[in-house]
Length: 177
Image 1 (cartoon, rainbow, N blue to C red):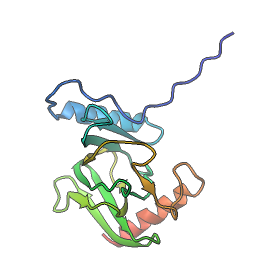
Image 2 (image 1 turned 180 degrees about the vertical axis):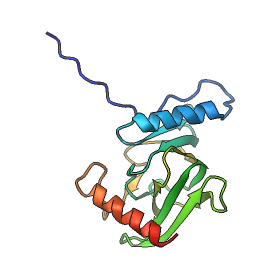
Image 3 (image 1 turned 60 degrees about the vertical axis):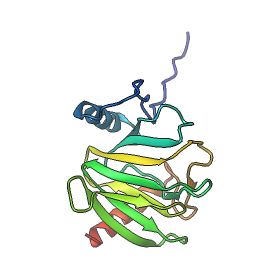
């Protein structure tokens, strides 16, 4: 008897094959469905064709309580821009010790709808609304071991402390709205 192993849920869709990709509501619906079905409550839809691409563009679909460990892009230094296409997020900036120095609510179609971060800034975001979709841009290439410098003071994704830390961040977001 052969034992079947379950395939892990992908962290990202495959990039479109076309040289010009139209961003449309069908794509948004696909990203939303992927984030709803993902155990991580989020999924990336890359628009760049390979990890070696010099500029990474992607849609990031996420649901509330999807945890993105605070991180920075330091080695190599990379700036990052995030624009909310659908839904709403809390965007956090931290100092080197993990204290929150800025929290903003960013909402699609709102006064504040995006954020641009310089390299080396610790940051994260949390979805405030279900079916939130972001457009993200940052320099490539992507190398998993060096893309993110995770904050040592924040719990790792999947750890026992994650839920409590997210509750703290959501609470801090409520206080600053």
